[in-house]
Image (cartoon, rainbow, N blue to C red; front, side, top):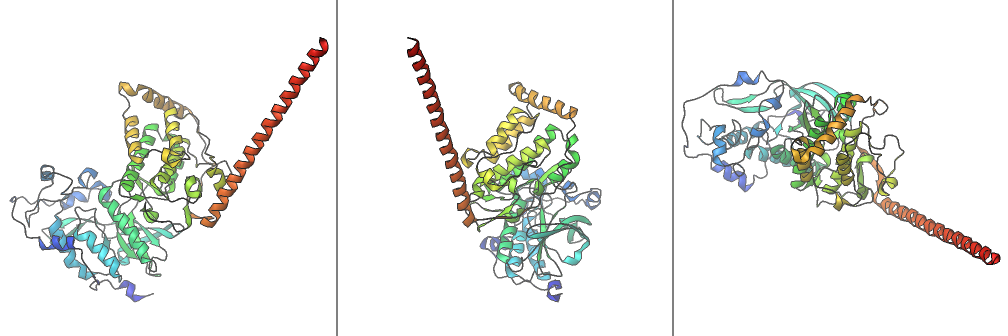
Length: 498
């Protein structure tokens, strides 16, 4: 074991701080806006919550100077030390930036680039959700293996200190949640591919700040034995959506299904509007925590203008046909994956569960058989999302608005929609759907298709289509010939009678 991995109390090797961050640190002394003698210690109240997510409502987590007018921020209060308005729930951005910067000498990841990223997130944080921490591995207890993916190993653990809640002005220290369940995602080879790892963290940070339906990332740690870096995220008590459907499909009402799909669409909308695509969306990467649905596994999330690496990674039924053909990932390819999630939510089964599916069939237009007792408007939307032409698929924003209409469709102009889902709900309650035959877990893996083979797949498909077209022409000629012979026979017999 490398003892260097465990040395935490060393000043990080900071190579640069952005001009924006330097300006922020230089303007910590601001004029007094409000004054008050009210100081309320709410630490005991936090102990009554079961999960960290319950402490701060989502509508109060994302407060930014540029997005919210000052009148809306007044309800958040103001800092008792600098008298500046809070930028988030009990969060003073300039004061906390100074504290984080001062405390940066107490830890290091031993990678200057990673240290810089962590510090940048901290000194620019607008709220308690928009920064990373470096978390020593010794802070974790009861580390338990959960699963192994194509490029990571996942564990569950107890974070003894728990995440930061706010700065306590009485004890002059961070108030933390305390013992908290988290997921440790060990990224294999991350110490060698540091730039890729930092890119993944940058995407995580952007989504931490602006979206509620993407899995929260608390920070980074390091696996003691190998030195691989760890992404520390929220733990979803109900597992992934595949597991949830397997256990609860009988009681999975249509209104709950629509809310779940809307949550996923909202997460996708923010990812796409940020210029990213997920690239590995399936029910194994959608997590459930109570009624809350979150998109996870952002390791493959990449900018839409980035080039691919010549490899496919994921779960085959959820990969769009254009990707199998060698095209670049796009937001439309995520929408295709969303269509397959819609299929699984409606049927309780993985797409193509009863078929021997392969990439050529998908490229040629093969799609899962439509699930029975599903509202017509639902199946039509699903088919538009898995359209072979990416340009014909709707975007995530359209999906969010449409699901919202369906969820609140009791108004008169949507009475047909309301009745269709009501009828589907009645039929759901009266049916006994067996999903035991399909209990496999969805694990992303490298698909044995690489770009040099893509051309042959296209060529094979084109050849098959050409063969079909030739066969159709030949059949047509035969039919014409037979009809002509029959006509001639009829004419000949008519002449004989005369």
